[in-house]
Length: 148
Image 1 (cartoon, helix red, strand yellow):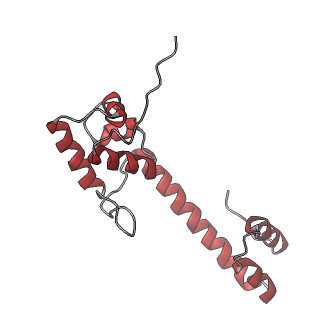
Image 2 (cartoon, rainbow, N blue to C red):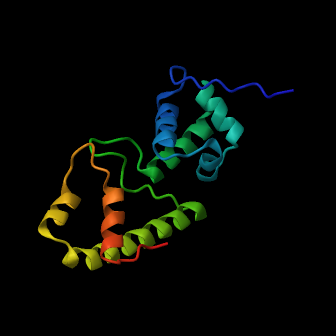
């Protein structure tokens, strides 16, 4: 026996829940991750996304969570107050910081060895540019080690 699929209906959502739904899409937050931010069960969040109207107490919790996360979208994107504090997000952020630091090291080592034509090749912005292959070839040519 399979579970009945949940029908998410943005048209039936309250404006506040619609913003929460949009934020969950933009920030890749499942109802289970949202349940850590809003003290509600994932099933209740699914019901809100299906069109159930939150009770006044739940609406206040949603409002507080939206304020914490940066609330409503602006011209430049979501507010700067929102930070994903989950351990998974922190691990991912550390991995990304390490990768960027490693790649800065690679380019700092590679750049002085490049000819002007090779430097031009790395900064072009053509849609067909496959920079990864060029970077690999130049690293191999100049014996610059890539991070693992």
